[in-house]
Every structure is written in C-alpha cells, then in structure tokens.
Image 1 (cartoon, rainbow, N blue to C red):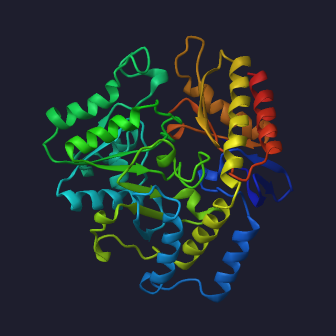
Image 2 (image 1 turned 90 degrees about the horizontal axis):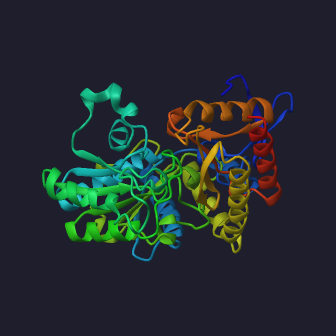
Length: 411
C-alpha cells in the first residue's frame, strides 16, 4: 500500500487530500471510525467538552463514567449488568478481562483461538493466535496459555466435510486440552464472535453453544472480545447477543469512540466485579473526551432504525460481494460476514491462499481506484476486509462494489 497519500479532512466514508482528491474508506479506518469521519454530533459534543475541560484524573470522572456505563449496559445481554470504564484501547481491556477471570476463579491459564487477535501489548500478543507476532518476544512471553484450532470451516483444520457432520472437532479440542494437556489451572476462554484480523471467520451455527457448555462443565470464564464486532458492526449492538454466546465478560473498543476517539470498556456479570481500582487503571482511562465520545456514540447507534439499517444494507453488501464471487470465482474463494463486517478470501488457481495477490489487490485499490481496503493478519493473510462505517448509505455500498468490480475485472 502506498504511504505517500496524506489526508487533510474527512466526511462520512470519504477522505480528502490537500489537493482535494477524494478517496473512499471501505474499512472505517482500522474499524474504529464507526460513525464515519467528522460525524457532526460527535464533533459538536467533543468541541463543547474541549472548551470546558479536557482532562482530569479518573478519580473525578466516576459519576460520568458510571452514567456512560449504564447507557451501554442498557443494550447489553440481560445477564451482563456491571462493568469497568478505565481503558481506552482494546488490548488493555482484554488484559483486564483476563485479570478479572483469574482473580475470580484463582486460576491463570488462558485458552484462545488460532488466528485470533486480542491486541498489541505483550500480554495481548501472547494470547493472540499468530506465531509471527510472538516470534520476536519468545523470551518474555508467558507459557500460561494455549491456542486451539479456530472454527474455520472454509479451510477446516481437521479436513472435515462440514457442520454438523464434523462433530465440532474444533470445540472438542478445547475440551481435550483442558482435560489432558493443561496444568488443570485453566481460568478462561477468550474468543471473538467473528475472528476479525484472522480473516473475518464466522463460526458455524451451534459453535458458541458448545463452547458455553464446555465452560459451564469445566468452570471456565467465557470472554467475548467484541473490540471489532461490538456497537453495531454486525447490525446488532452486541454480536454476543445475536449469536447467543452468553459470555461472562464482554470487551469493547474501536467503534465505541465513534469517530476514532480512543475508548474501551469491560462489561461483566456483577459477581465478577472483583478488581480493585489499583489493579487495573491507566492515566488516560476514564478521560472526559473518551467518555463524551462514547456517550454520544451510544446515543446515535441506539436510535430507532439505526441498527436495522445496518442489517438491511449489510444484506445488500453481502449480496454484492457474493456477486463478485460469481464473476471472479477464480480469485475469490469465499465471501463471509454479516452487517458491515465482510471478508473476501483470495485464492490462486489451485484454490490455495494467495497472499501476494491479496496485498496487490489492496495496493491497486488505493493507487488506481482511490479506495482503502485492509488485509488479514497484517499482510500475512489472504482475506480482503470490507467494513464501511455504519453510516454508509446504499449509494456508498454501490460505489464500493463498483470500484471492486472494476479492480477485479483487470486482474
């Protein structure tokens, strides 16, 4: 991807250079521009807050933080009734979730999925399912975690023929690890409702119910990392509720800040409220700008018809992307997603993952079609992500499709 493009302003899903060249951002920044660039309501709310007071210690923002938290919990799964607003990034929110699980049950092993992504801090890197991200830090990483196969049905790690005939072997691997491969000290399972950076992998129906059953049987805390899927990305406020995951803890970030303002939250069942403030707190945690952005974002996303619009338009987006697959099946092996969270799996002539072509598609999109796309696994994967802002219109979606169609036609 070219690095010599410099943007000076943005509106909706569009970015502009100093020369007023217009680009379409088809991936919402790094999936954190949920309401598009420069959403007027958030800009106004933040301007007012900046003029009044930019920052005070979180010791003095507790009332506002609680009010914002209550607004989020109104839309959370019914059993999720408490939370923590002292994070501003998903990495530390996920660390906090594991801290809660470990302190709650007195155990310390973590299970996560292959190709998962839970953040960039040392701990979050350790529990993320990509060896290339851990390679340089082997001497400083904990061994108190296990990475098990992902529910990647398109390329099943067990070469199974599909659900339900496969017997959900990927979930049985979790059970087997706890029973036979662990130290008997497993605290929790952390997973993404849709494996975002891993390639927009959507687990099959019944997967999460089996995971929940295992957690209940083995007394494990179930953590849903909704940093990418939460706050409307799938057309539902929480993917956890749509997929009936029934997690004990939910983490949020990215889209929570609406227009790119760093914001994060940890939500949980009230009995998991076990941390002292000094056990998980940051200088900028619970800051006024993050709380203001979160509050206004929740107000916008929870309005009548907003999520329904994402669901309806998301179906159109999915249909158009599948239309691309019909036309360019020699390049696009699979299309998967929901709402405004989609991925195109790029293949070679033999159906194998084509990473070089994936990266070339992203470069061509930017250089020749003035459209921003992103690839999976930091350029090591073969999935092109399509995730426009939740405010994207049908016209925007048609334009994204049109540019993709022109791009694939010339490959």
